[in-house]
Length: 302
Image (tube, rainbow, N blue to C red; front, side, top):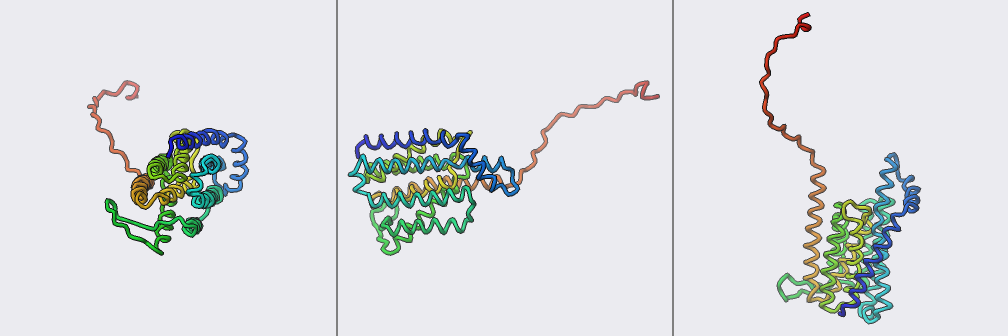
């Protein structure tokens, strides 16, 4: 793959997030969020609700970057779109649905079971459209095992697992964006080396979008991914790892699983540490001074 389209997608994704996030932080948009949050307060502090809702719009900038990069690939690099046009269209449409489910959860809380069912249905549509893991092989071996009908089950589990892990990682501020950037960069490099043009260009475009997003997300964070952005990020990482050729697919999936698994373990550990009761600190050792016995003053005697 030529370096020019990859550089173009990288700069385009970064530019979109750098321009859209300041618009999402405008006071006028916050006022509209205030009107929505007033119906969600339910006895809680309205200021806390507004801050929590207003800071979860980072996924909007990511989905705008994803749509724009996909359309630019379609118009400017038609050869790349023809190689993976059907796959790319499937990932684009189902990714928007995953984003919508997460956005619904950010503003109108969805139970975990209902959200999981909806995400599983979307992943099943992806499998039905032909995005599947067909061959699996142990690491460091060239022996592959054809999954056959079980390929859809493995693909479905892989996509749902990554969505859940990224939403879990999002509990730690800035961690989901950093691990998403590492995963997208790894997938873009592997796709460029193997020649899968569409997934490689989309991955490098999303890596650029995450670079621009992290400018506002790293502490002190002004905006967060929310359930919508984290779910979209996990869904895209899962799909781009599957679209690798069979020879490189297992290595890409293993590397992504290690990166995301370590991040999820760290996020779980941080959450567990916050739930533990705080232990009282031991008193510092201090030197005792010998008190001198003084005779009472004449006023005390009276």
